[in-house]
Every structure is written in structure tokens, then in C-alpha cells.
Image 1 (cartoon, rainbow, N blue to C red):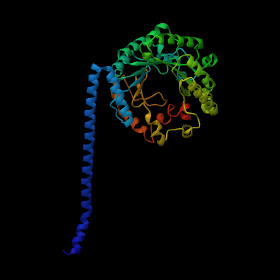
Image 2 (image 1 turned 90 degrees about the vertical axis):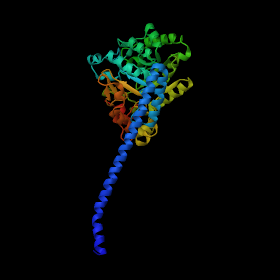
Image 3 (image 1 turned 90 degrees about the horizontal axis):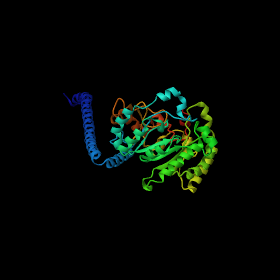
Image 4 (image 1 turned 120 degrees about the vertical axis):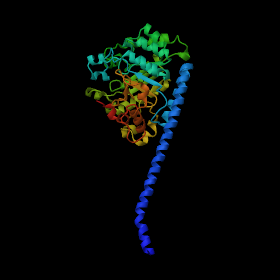
Length: 414
């Protein structure tokens, strides 16, 4: 065999040799990835076991240290944007009861019949089971989203359970049912009473909150303040007023700052109206941008003069209004602080766990079928956390009315 034939023979074997080398390379790479993943999983499991053990010790020895430790851990996980979180929520809203004594014009309740709404009542045994599992870690609990919590038959029992676990109650109410006995019980456990008042005058307020009496609500708040002043200042619950911005009340928002100060509120929180019915579209400030911008600026100036904290949406015609939805750039800056996927959870009356109150959210699981901790780190939660910082977040994140208050798709969610 001459040199030429030998070279030809070697060249014929090159593809086979190349395939063998490539095959070995792929297997080694796959094995290396498997080993790496196993090691990461092992470290995560060891860390989790240590954290759970530490939390178990803290539950027995120092409940308040447990809450502080969980809070720090939740902050770390949020900053890391970890799909799997080692912390439990620090805030949970348990939508115990959908009953309400008012028929507010902007409320989502108007989409349902009274019969359907009255049937939506939380199973108190489920509440107690969830409380036993989650409350040791919580700083705050809210007892309603779309109803009046003071109407719940088990309201006083809910307060007792919150007090047992040293959880502060974040109470949102229309204040129509407040009386001296209830105020006394509320003050013993609440950290903040939030009263929904959407007008500075009787005429505007009563045209929005159908069934309420303006003078009665103002008097009830004054009674609350009378009892609140008796509590030592560093332990005194805060009072916040809530105001839903719409066409019929936007011109009263500067005047409302003065009313809030007279009612001894520490803060005022405003949000744009979310449209649930076509007949309410005319109330959206998307159609009255210049008017809205003017009165929001005047309100902010008035709040500053009164030394009153005002939480108000950005003006229209800002970058948010132009973009409309969340882009990759603003996701990586402004919106990375979204707390809902790492620090908060919402549990509906039927046991459904949802990530937030934004319309269009997915259902993550049900506490009547699985423990909350199991739901909190399931595949759906992990996917939602992972996609939040990409260019393809879940639809409810794209049109979040909390982060993008000028977005038409969130304002007109029918």
C-alpha cells in the first residue's frame, strides 16, 4: 500500500471518528449538566431544610423574629428574581366574604347578581387551616377585596385569630357599619384602617357609593379617631383614605386633601377606575387627560402644603401612556420591584390562590385541595416569576393597572 492509498483510507474513517468524538462529547456534556443540576438541587434542598428548621425553631421560641427573618428572606428572593422562593408571603389578602351593603358604580360586583354574590362566602374552617399554616410568617393580612369585611359573620373571630398570631389587620372598609364596639375590637389588632371615600362633597360621594350617607361616614371616622387618640402614639393604628379617580370626582381631589387632613388621615391613596361595564367608559380619565393632569398636579401641591402623603398615579402623556404596555426596558428598571410574586398572595372566597388583584390573572391553585406552601412554589408560580423579567410576561403583568395606570387595556377590562 503506497502513501496515497493510506491517506485515502484514513480520510474515509474521519467521519466515523468525528461522529464517535462528537457522541462522547455530547454524553460528557449531558452528564456534566446532570451532575451540576443535581448539585444545585441538592444545595437548594439542604438550604431549604436548614431554613425550614430555623423557622420551626423560631415559631416555638420567638414568633416576631420568625416574621422578621421571613421578611428579610422574601426581600432577598425578590431582588434575585428567584423562580423558587424559600420565603413565605409577608402579606396575604383573604377575600372572606363578598357581601356588601353598598352598590358602588365602579365595583366589579355589578357584573354579578345579588344571589350569586351572597352565595360567595368563605368556609371558616378553611380560613383557620390556612391561618395556622401561613399566619406565623405574616406581617399583614387583609380580610376583603370586593366586599365589606364588617358584614362577615365571622369577622370578630377573624380578628381574634389574627391577634393570636400577632398579625396586623389591613382593614379596607366603607366605614358605614363602624360603631363603638367594633372600633374597640378593630383598634386592638389593626395596623391601618383604610376607608374608601370617593368624593369631597355629599353629592359626588353619594352618587358613586350608592346606599351610603356622607355625613354618617364622616361621623364614624371621627368616632374612630376619638378612640384612636387614646392609644399611645407609637402603637396607634394609621388612618388612610382611598379615592378612585374618575371623571365625576377628579375636580374634587384637591378639596379632598383638605378633608383628609381634617379627618386626621396620615395618607391618601388614589387609583384609576377600572372599567367593568361599558356604561362606565365615560368615567375613565383616559378621555379627559388634560383635565386629569391639571387636578392631579393641584392635588399633589395641596397635599405637600398640608404635609399629607399622597399616592397618585403618574400624569398622562408620560412614557407609560405612550408605551401602553410593559416593554423589556421598563421591565428591567421600574417594574422589577413588583412585590406580588414574592411577598404577597390573594386567596379568594372559594379557596383559589391568585397572584394579585389585576384582572386576567391566572389561578395558581386552591387551598381546599392543597396546602398553601405547595401552591406557593408550584410550576405556574415559578413560570410567572421567571417570565416577569422577560419580554414575554403573563398578560395580566403586561397590562398591570398598578404599574401602568394609563394603559387602556387595563382601564377598559370589560
